[in-house]
Length: 365
Image (cartoon, rainbow, N blue to C red):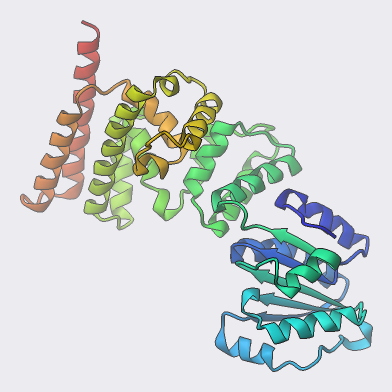
């Protein structure tokens, strides 16, 4: 069996159902994703009565127990034995050779699932898996790319459609935590399985942002929602123990990024002209690959979906100095005047919208 991409993983599961089982499956990449994907295959074997032995070599005691194994015992009555080894990069060379030599003896009642964050092609386990087993590389992409691949694959399995803009919103909200991604995707599928298409409105209604992505919603809400809804959102953040200073820092960073992005768009007007998200994303990726472009790090670290929305918001702002004055005023009220956080943010928000209305009025003259 050759290399298998994440999108081809279902083929390995189909082969396992046909009793075509590899002697070793090597998953290379983030541990939580690798474990979840390995489980899709070995759970099929467990359903047929196979026994499972698990070793996490990142744990000192389990590593010691694994290294003390001498020979590998078949399950009772000839039942298949599964060895699941996490932290496979920790297997010492002598143990790797022992495993491969045992596999070469032709024992067909053993299956190895080896999960490693990294593994070089010169590793004897890699070489054996490439020739006789299956290698599933998950580390060749960024984590967000892996999650995006799994999102498209899952939507296809459930006959659901989501456009790229909506998918970007979902991925941005759930963040990079794989377990949170899975939970929110499963919930989304449950609510939308009969709808055919998943909209942005459904995403915002159903998906709970990861803790580090909660504030992401605040930036867009400033421009898209009415004042009372945004103040309610800020109130909820404070009730959920978000520090006022953390919210204020986010707002400083948000408007700093907007101002930097405005300057960048002036130097790259072709990006400003892209009205659809797909066209914008394509142009943005091309700019990132241009070695002659000097792109500020704060923009490189930002998801394209956020930048696309920022482009729309920038059309409503003409006076950034005024916005930063409002933020400094809020900081003084919090740190020196000791006003209640909700009162401080309410003042800021109403002053912010008043500033937008003044900008809008001026643009009509």
